[in-house]
Structures are given as structure tokens and as C-alpha cells.
Length: 455
Ligand SMILES: *Cc1c(COP(=O)(O)O)cnc(C)c1O
Image (cartoon, rainbow, N blue to C red; front, side):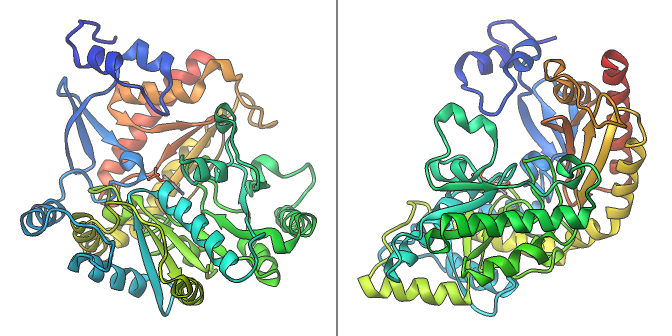
């Protein structure tokens, strides 16, 4: 299958690249898909093969791979000012405009924005902001960070510590002081006989017990994705945020909504916190922020946190933090355009209009005896493979079922991603109804092939 000639793209990739988050047996056997260009929701490899990318790259290429407005904006900004920093009281005009825009479209009346190059760095920065703030307010012991099992917040030492996935143990992570609460996935973690409301109440009680046990005055903040993304597309159990937010408020614990995936329309509203009807103290944005056309992340502080952090910085005359490329003018120009494209050129609307069709397609595939459940919100969906539907028993891990499904999809010209025992679909916002049908047809073919082999 893999092109093994020493000068093939596959061999060259395999020889010189340290693959990240890649199933090595699959890539050695099959060769990497080396991508040359894209068009709409499709990508093309070095063999000229076409793939419908049902994962929007990594959730981020929401406007597809050749949006003329975005590439022209990038080219124009490269001609005007191709790079600048945001230190020492200097920053580009694009950076000024983007901060205004982000506060305007945020759930906050007022606020302040800090830029990074990625979502991981934005979460890392937010943790530093909280540590800085609490210390400045005379509470240097407020350093513990609360997140959830299966939450994904990134890969830097701090954001990987926040991420609740077992693979981080190979790095000796999490660091001390990073506490993981229960994952709000009712289908998987609900106990026999427990209703969804009881399950939610149990998680809320666990949160409060944890706060009391650790000491409310030792906790710096709570971070959550409105819908867990890389943890397997897990919408919260019903009433989850309405149950946990008041508890966090009661103990004065800042609530940070990690909107790196949910932000800018993925769940059908501008923000995931809007979809679940809560107002956080700060928002973390990345991925869709630039529609994937530039690496960039942002911390958007709501009014109250912005005022407190600003006061803490004024007191020492500086906030001593920043990345060389923070607020990069090309990234900011692209983000301004991407926000306009998503919100005003029909992309967000397309998500809302096609969500019922997307859900119907997922529900239809979930009728298969080896699909335990479908779940999702807006344009985020997952199908969970099971050996036994009634008992929700997963396939044996050694069968690598979700990798096999993803590989079978690749063979049919569809890119979708395995996560645990599930298959994730998060199509770009520009996808048409016909392309969505193509996506489900290809996925159905792949599922049938793999389940015939393993079931
Ligand atoms: C992808 C992701 C991150 C990390 O972003 P990177 O740009 O990969 O560092 C953080 N939080 C969430 C919710 C993500 O999906």
C-alpha cells in the first residue's frame, strides 16, 4: 500500500519526521498522506488523490482550503506589514482592531485580549494570568487548576497537565496542583439506574466536595470546553453547566470557557457558552479564530477579570508575559476577515441550517448494531463503535477499530479521525448538503467494511 521507494514522499516523511499524535503502525504500513493543495472542503495528495476532509483539518479550516477572501487578506497584509510584535507599547493597527472586534463579539460588555500562537499557549497564558492575579491580590496559594477527565486543553507542560487524557503520563504529567473532575458523558459514565439529572447532580456534588477538600482558597480557576472536542465530542449531560456554574460562583472560582473548537459557530452559536447558557469570566480562542489560515490564539478576559488583572499589572508597572509573534499583524488581519466571513457571509448560518441534516445522517449510521451511540452539537459529531450495543461493551483495544475505520475512510477518499473508540466528524462550515451526503456515504462504506472484518 505504502509507496516504499526511497525517494517517495511517504518514505521521505517517514525518514525525517517525528510524527505527533499519529498511529505509528498505520503510518508505517500505509505511508503518510502528503497533502499538496486544497479546494473547498477537499484536499489532494501527492498522488493526485482527492479526499473530503470531514474534520476541517484539525477542526479549524472552517472556510475550506481556498477561500479567496482569506488568502487575499493575507497577501495584502504581507505587502503592508508582514510582521510585528506587541511589546514595549508598540503593536500593529490590525492588532488594535482585532481586540476591539473580539470584545465586541464576545459575551462581555467590556474586556481585554492577549494574543498567543496557539490554543495551548492561550490556556498556558490564562493559567499564568490567574496565578499572577491571585498573588497580586494577596492570595498566592490560589494556584490549583480544575479541569475534567477527557477535557483537552493542549500540549504545553501546563496545558497538557490540564488535559485529562491518560497519554500524558508518559511525560510524567500532570504537574502537581492540576485536578481532574468527572467527565460529563452520561452514556458512558452514568451508573446503572441513574437518570441523566441524577448523573449531573452527582458531578456537581463531586465538584463541590473537591473544592471543599482542596480548600476553596487554594483554587485558581476552572477550565471547561462547552462541548469536549478531542476527548471524543462529548456534549455535557443535560443541565451540567447550570449545575456547576453556581457552585464555582459560590466559592469565587473564575470560570474559563475553552472555546478553541466551539468558538465562532461550531455549535451553532458564536460561542459554546451561549449554546449552554452560561457566561464565563474569560474565553480561550484559537483554531477557528483565523479559520486555520494562521497559527494564533487569544485570551479574551471579561470585564471584571480584565479590570482586576489590569490593576495587578499597574501595581508593578508591567504584565511580564508575551510571545515574539503575539498579535502578529498578518494573523490579526486574517482573524478579522475570518470572523467577518464566518459571521456575515453565511457560514454560521450554513451550520445552523444543515445541523438537522448532519444529525439525521449520524442517527441513521447509529442504527448499526456496532454503533453504540451518536452524539454531537452543531457541526461536531461522533459515532461510538461497540462490540455489543446492549451492554455498551467496546471492542478489544488490540483491534484498533477506530483506526481501521479511519483508514478505511481514507481509502474511500474521506478524512475523518479516530478518537478512542469513536469516529469524529466536524466538517467545514462551507460544506454543502450534497458534500455532506457524500461524507456519510463514504463513511457508511468504510464502517461496513471494518465491521464485516471484526464483528
Ligand atoms: C486544539 C485545542 C487546544 C490546543 O490548541 P493548539 O493550537 O493545538 O495548541 C486547546 N483547547 C482545545 C479545546 C482544543 O481543541
